[in-house]
Image (spheres, chains in turn brown, blue):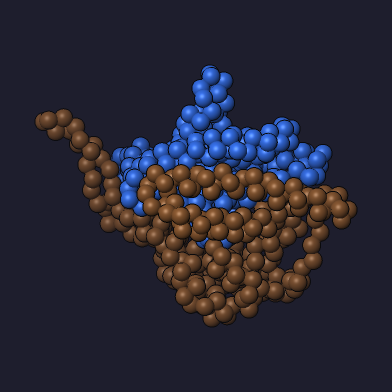
Length: 252
Length: 222
């Protein structure tokens, strides 16, 4: 998690407008879900990989690591679609039968896997090139209520503070053999979780006191170092997505 | 139990988003109303939301030999109620998609429905019902967390079965298939999460009674 976030904050495209990157990501996902066939999904995957690693300069191994977790779930999901469950009546009574699905359904399952991989590559592009607060600010501009967006933005800030507490606590528990057995593991995890809530509330109360001392009235305006989105570039992205839609429809 | 990005067909992705959106909108409306009245609650809610996210980063032992992560559904729902848990859960799922590439944007609606709506509602109803029936807090939270987690997994299986019905046995065959595949990890995980949440609840009651009362008092209007 920390690595993905750090790459997003330090990457070459961090100052590029979040609106443009989100448009590209959602546009590509729409093409993948609504238009593209198997060949088109492979093309989308390759294109987003090229964009993320080649143009945005995300290190190849970081990109690959980001794909590993979804890939595991994806393989399991697709393998499940390969199996058909039935019920057979026999002399000794009924029983569940398992069989491979017909070839057309196997092709459909592979297609679902390809479509998901293409969409995941678009998601990973967004995650590795855009700091999350930039997306939260964009959501606020797009009409998400200010208070909800503020809670999300503050959650992001608190997240790292609590994560640090969690890591420190876990390290000290491990040093005291807190994870040496299953029962100790469960108890140590519970102690850690129970210890974190008062800390979280304390951080919240302290931040509130600090903000109120600075005239906090419920509004949390922040400065952004992001470039302004350009209509020309947004039009270019929309055009590019349309061309991609056409090409994927053509190659199937 | 997250459905991966792009796994659901477009019609299902849109339909689940349409089903989840009104609940999240209602939760947001309640949150906004309270935060406007008490701006300081914004910080408290954010800190609590971050706590729910961090809970999912805890590793707990699973019977299958590996370790897994709790959902935090039971504790969140019993602390904040199902509506706020739906909003915080949606934000947590969005963060998981954008920080871990876990779940997704197109499947956010489906994941929100199972993990941020059904799970918390089941957990909260059970917790309230069992407490009302005089069951001890730790026992009530154990069942709330474990069955809230199981409800999430059952709903996810149904969502996948509706999208990919079995060619021979249809929706119910596919449901049985997905339920069996996930049961291997999810049932032990639900029990582990129930135990973890019960211990956390006991520790919070014993050592953080003051913070819990403050939280309950301040969240009363939410």
